[in-house]
Image 1 (cartoon, rainbow, N blue to C red):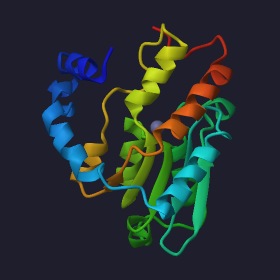
Image 2 (cartoon, rainbow, N blue to C red; image 1 turned 30 degrees about the vertical axis):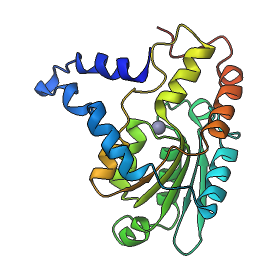
Image 3 (tube, rainbow, N blue to C red; image 1 turned 60 degrees about the horizontal axis):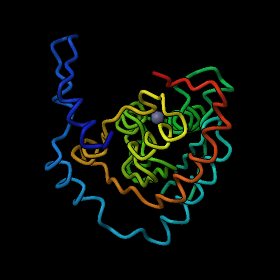
Image 4 (cartoon, protein in one colour; image 1 turned 180 degrees about the horizontal axis):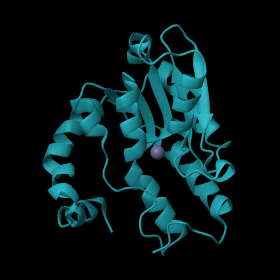
Amino acid sequence: MSNISRRQLLTQVTLVGGGLSLQNMVIPNAVAADMNNKFNNKPLSDHDKKYLLRAIALSEKGDYPYGALLRFEDGEIIEAWNTVLSSGDPTRHAEMTLFSKIFTQDLDWIKDRGKLKTATLYISAEPCTMCAGGIFWVGIGRVVHGASVTAVDDIYKEIYPDTAFSQLPVSVMAALHEVGVDVNGPYLNDKSAEVVRRRVKSAFDDNNPFEK
Ligand SMILES: [Zn+2]
C-alpha cells in the first residue's frame, strides 16, 4: 500500500471520542508537499550529519533499532536508545527515554526552557506521534531526523508481510513545523533504513508485535 493510499484510507477513519475526526489530523497531500518544501529541501550540513550519524549508531544499541541524541548549544550531549523490551514499557522509545534522562539529571523544565529551545534533537528515524508530542511538550527547538515513518513502516511490512502498522502512518512533522519547531529531514535515508532493516528481524524474531 503506498503512502498516498494510506493517507486516503485514514481520511475515511473517524474517532468517535469527543467527536474528533482523524481527518482533521491528516494533512492533504498538496498541503503536506508544500509544508515539506519549507523544511525538507535544505542540504544536510557536515555538523548535522556528524550527530545524525551518531544517532543512527546509537540505534544499534536499542532493543528496537532507534537512537536519539540531544545536543545543547554549549556542546553538551545526552544520548539514549530504545529500551522497550528491557524495560517492558512500550513508551520507552529512544526520544522518550532521552527526555526522562535529561529531567532526572540536573535539567529543570521551567528554568531551562531557553536551553531546550536552542537544543537540537537528532533522531535515527522520524519520530512517531507520541515522541513528536514529547518534542512539543519538552520544548525542543530543532529536530534533525533519518528515515520517514512511512519508510520504516514499509520495512516492517517487507520483513513481516502480515504487519498491520508498525508506526502510526501520519507524519506530525509538518504540525511541529507549524508550531515553530525547526524540522529537518528525512536525511541519510539509506543508512538509517539499513539499521532498521537489518535489526528488526533479530529484535522480533518470530514474534512480530504488529501482526494484523
Ligand atoms: Zn516514538
